[in-house]
Length: 518
Image (tube, rainbow, N blue to C red; front, side, top):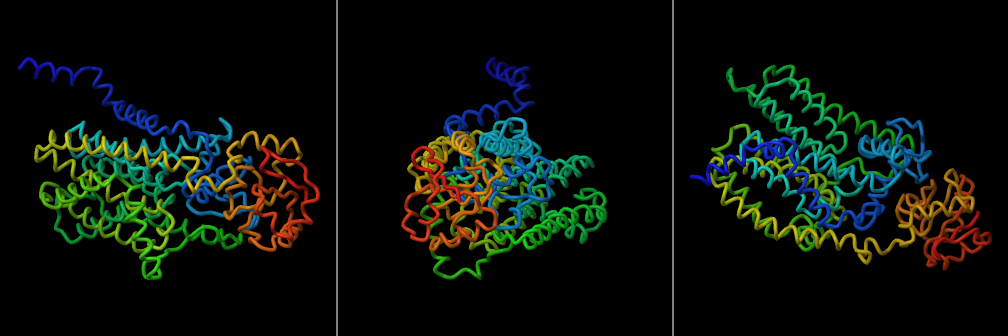
């Protein structure tokens, strides 16, 4: 009796109230994981390791905004000059634009981009916790479930990087909170905040709208029902207009982006589906093989998958414990997730970050399961089991993350390591007269922007000139404004057509990156 009184008093103490109000427990957990994964060591490391190509493209957008003092948001550029003035676009560039503003304050540091991306994802998890608390009063369970996503090596690696998939997911979690809050409290400010964040999420990554589209089904479902005081929408007709605006704005962006790339002769970014039915059978087999042998371990430890499957079973078996809306949402979201997998199936062949687009369903399973666990009074059992799974998974996550950032990782080792001395490299270039306004050809580089990003120079790479007879193609680019040739691997010297261009060497950085005046 004395212990219970002490425990109750402790939980109601001012300190605990402050911790709950400001989510200090989550912030502490995020900080501990940040240091446990050794992320601080990679803070100012540029795009590297898995999918350096796409990371460098994203980083190039932000750096190009920073380099152009008065550039307009809707005129994004990359460093590669294949298109007109480097104009190209993929997702709505608000993330890149905002990061460029931070660059103007703190300088163009890779750590600024990494911290912004990671911080935004953590904010999304805080809002996810708040969403769980709308469904259950179990503060501990909501905190533990909000930490679970940061035990995924996939989510940690990309949230601490440059590709915006996790940022879009985070914004959708914020949108989900306001949507659920509107369901409970029917406050119009929650409605409009929810619609605003859903719009932003859809602009950054249109596939995140699978978390929003079930509300359309709610609307049509309610249209078939008689008048009820428990309706999801207070003003059905007006709500249909509001919801349609979210989708219309996202579709307008897709149309704008396609047209922007077309008129600027840019073809670097995918703006269409790559569905299962267009994928050759050998590639289908390879995708499943790679998923089962490699990527499944990047998503979570196998034990976490078993725990997750158990949660799905719990939601299905005790679905009567959640509302009809929640059951409906579960079914529709499952179908929409399947459609996303099918429509972009071919992209998975080399892009594991497309798996992030499947995670809205994962988050909803956690949300629904938390509610059911509380109603079945399985909280203590869930704490013990979840903590055990989390301890196992966190060690697994650290191992995968360290491996991806390891200097000997195949996806990192292929790049000349001198590029990672980015500040010294760019200072040296300025000293030899290769200033930022000069255009370069950087070889060897099979991507549009990797080496150009580290050089912080506009120009071209092997993706523009090919990998044979490059001397002739370099001469063509010289006529388009290329002034310098940068060689970061001596293997290209075997191309005989290149030799006439190597007469005027103006410098060498770190004994491995050579500069020639064309």
